[in-house]
Every structure is written in C-alpha cells, then in structure tokens.
Length: 338
Image 1 (cartoon, helix red, strand yellow):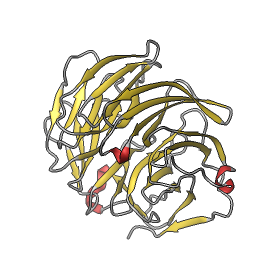
Image 2 (image 1 turned 135 degrees about the horizontal axis):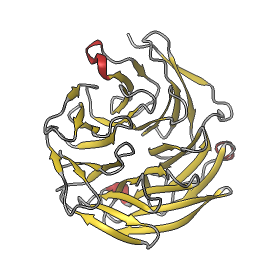
Image 3 (image 1 turned 90 degrees about the vertical axis):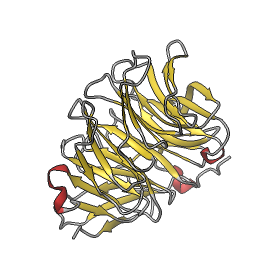
C-alpha cells in the first residue's frame, strides 16, 4: 500500500481515498458534482488485474459506488455526456467497455485494438462518438450503438498516448504519440488535417482549451508543457511551461478560467499554472505534493471552481482546492517562450 501523506499535505485536502490498485486516470462526472471515476491497475500496469472504480464524495471520504473488476490493467475512462449512469473505460487487453451504473452491468465490450488501449474520450460537443488511442499505433472512433468501430486512423508512427475531442467542434479530435507529434483529425477524413511536431520526445498528453477553439496544451517526456495556437503553428509555441522534474503525464485546462491549467507528473507533483500566452510574460505555477509516487491522473470539477482530483501510483485518489496554496509552498515561475 502507498504511504499516507504527512499532516502538512493533508491540510488542503477536501477528501482522500485509498485504492486497491495504482491510479492511472480520474474524471469527474458531468452530472453529479461529487462523483468520480478512477481507472486503476496492478503491478505498474505491466501484469495483473485492473479496476474501474466509481466514488462519491461524502464529507472528507470518497465512498465506493461501484467497482468493475478487469483481468487486465485499466488505463483510462470517460463519462457519457448524455446519461449520468454511462461510463466507458479501456484496458490493457485492447478492449473498450461501456458500463451502466444503474444496472451495474457492462452494456457492450469491443476488442479491436491489438495492444493496450491507453486513452478514451467521449465527445461533449457531438455527444455521440467515442475516440480511443492504443499502443498498436491506431486511433479508433466508435458509436455506442454500433457493434464495431466506425473508422480507424493509422497515420501515427508510434504508440498513442492520448486522444481528446474538441469541446468546440463536433467532429474534430486530437491525438498524441510516441512519434513526437500531435495530430488534429476530422472524423470524416482519413488523413489528419494538421500535424504539430510539438516536442522532440514522446508526447504523453494534450488538452483543448475550453474557452478558445484554437488553443491546446501538450505535455511530454521532455518535462515541459507547451501551449499552441492552431492558427500559427509556424511561429512556434505560444508558451513553454517549465518546472516539472520528470515527464508530464497529463494536462487539463480549467472549465472555469481560460488561463488555468493543471499538470500531473512523474515527479510526484501536481502543478496548477496561470498561463501567459503572449510569449513575453512568464507563467507561474503552484505545486501540490499530495502523493508519494507518480501522479498520472488529474481533472477539474465542473461544478466547484478550483476543485481538483488526482490519482497516483501510491494507490490513492485526492480531492483538494487548487486555489489555496499548500503551506510553505511559494509560486514558481517559468521563463517566457522565446
């Protein structure tokens, strides 16, 4: 079991729960302000079982609502934007599964990917389609009522680490890969409509700004986060956020403020950034050290401004107010992009 955080770390926590396995991804329900989905895996996700866990905040506790047991690691999850009881999750055996919380039953399970599926996202803009990315180098788009995938996108030269629908355009999504690129896709086109050579190393994560359809953030093994404007890729990144000591595993834009971004890292920390997009002003961040192992999952609550959930390889999930800096932690500053 992961060791409990010390008293200083506990002070700014709203809730915390120990998990049975290592945390890989966390996502707040779009319907229930206190409900969380957490994807978990045994033994560093290499061998062993997994669990898709649903938790409800009750005071300072996170009470289990349902646990779906898997025979392989569970790496990512996404809530349906139209049904509060529907959730999709993906696993190391190449599967995508749709779960109904009301009946506690699996509605449908797909197994087309030929390697670990590392990412899944249900579109909030079109509300119908699901996108997955896998270590077989492919991205697939699905409709929950169809018996098989609608389309496969195979332009990446290496494994897919993240996939995300645009919150602004119903048919656009992005994918990041070990080939050091971000690709923007229209689900009706076989080829990517834009390729961004965003980093020199593997890109583990990206997220679309909720306020600007052209702004996105990427995080990489190179320890940096970069902010991009799709309309001016040739000018380079809008900003580079530096401060993490190891790879950036996940980035998430705030749904409440256009310039607030959270980043989870293998350096065991979570940073919340005030992003400056003018290439001149340095961006500042607050560092939170609630975990004692790699932090892989982060998400902003849709209803409670500033409230963030994280999950980690220390087998815990935490909920805290990111607007309140932890004791004795100052702001760190990253240099402006050149």
